[in-house]
Length: 163
Image 1 (cartoon, one colour):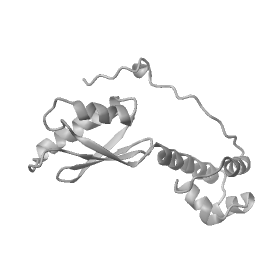
Image 2 (tube, one colour):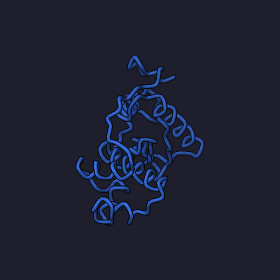
Image 3 (cartoon, helix red, strand yellow):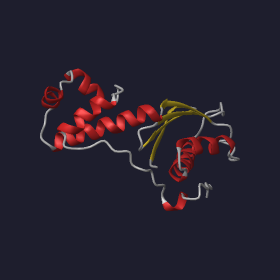
C-alpha cells in the first residue's frame, strides 16, 4: 500500500494510506529531532507501510522494531477500516456519477435520496444501507459486488520482512 507520511509535531507523525486509512504515530523520544533524523524516520516508515500487507501488520512491526528512534512507537487510528471503506465507496460513486454526466442533484432526484445525504455518502461520512446502495447502483448502471481481495504476489505467503 502507498503511504504519505509527515511530521505534524516534534514527536507526532501523520500516516495517510492509499486505502483511505489514517493514523497518528507517537515517537517515544522526547528530545528534539534533527531534520535529517526526521527524513530517516519518514523513509523507514514509508518503506515499512509500503511492504506490509496491512496497516495493522505495519504498526505491529514498528512497535517492536529494534531501530532506536522507532522502537516502541505507538499508533492511534484516525480513520479506521470501516470509515476508509465508506470513503472509498463514496469516492467511487462520485466518480461513476460524474462519468455518466449526472450532477449530485440529478442522482439524488432519481434515487429519491435527500441531496445532503447523497453528498455525505460520496464523502464517506454516511453509512449507506444495502437498499440505498442498490438504488444508486441501478441508476449508475452498475451492480453491487463483493470482490475477492488478492494480495500482491510478494505477500502471498503472509510473510513480512523489513529489508
